[in-house]
Amino acid sequence: DAGVIQSPRHEVTEMGQEVTLRCKPISGHNSLFWYRQTMMRGLELLIYFNNNVPIDDSGMPEDRFSAKMPNASFSTLKIQPSEPRDSAVYFCASSPQGVYSYEQYFGPGTRLTVT
Amino acid sequence: AQSVAQPEDQVNVAEGNPLTVKCTYSVSGNPYLFWYVQYPNRGLQFLLKYITGDNLVKGSYGFEAEFNKSQTSFHLKKPSALVSDSALYFCAVRDYNTNAGKSTFGDGTTLTVKP
Image (cartoon, rainbow over all chains, first blue to last red; front, side, top):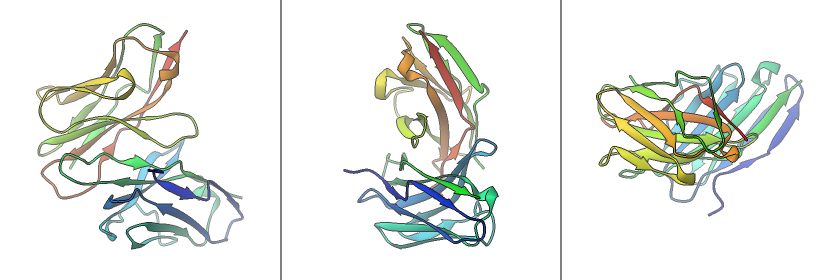
């Protein structure tokens, strides 16, 4: 298995631009998580989905952030408009959520820089 | 509510010595507990988990962790540290008694193993 796939790996954009981050979870996993990691704030859960349905988006910083999961094999995290404080590494993770199987498998991350 | 505390920001050990990275947790029900490792510029990688059964759990790369219910702890251990074990380690907990799919992560402990 290729693991969780994220694209792009690096994104540099100017303030005010729209940014879309993409994630392909591991096949058969039915939970998907988006995290943000910065030195100042550590690892933050933004949103997670079970069976393509958003369950908890309380970590989404503000309305500029939105996430979708149109099917079991694809999710996007969109920031519109982007701001310099959004600069961070964004991770996608998936989990099987089966009996005794709740560990998460993380992608390599997208390093976002907003100038 | 569920929470995790990693009381040490940094742990330094000499190569060949045993290492311990501490973790305590709080959940209202029964815990699922996890350890993850993050190497520089990489995503988090699952190491081991406690779900049920034996309190001593063995995982990848020679790591193990001991679940102690009375002390609400799940410390990560390794009998003989390697320089290559130097990384950022995260403890995470999920409450068994909730249907919520999310785990709560600690702030992380940086392990440095010196030759």
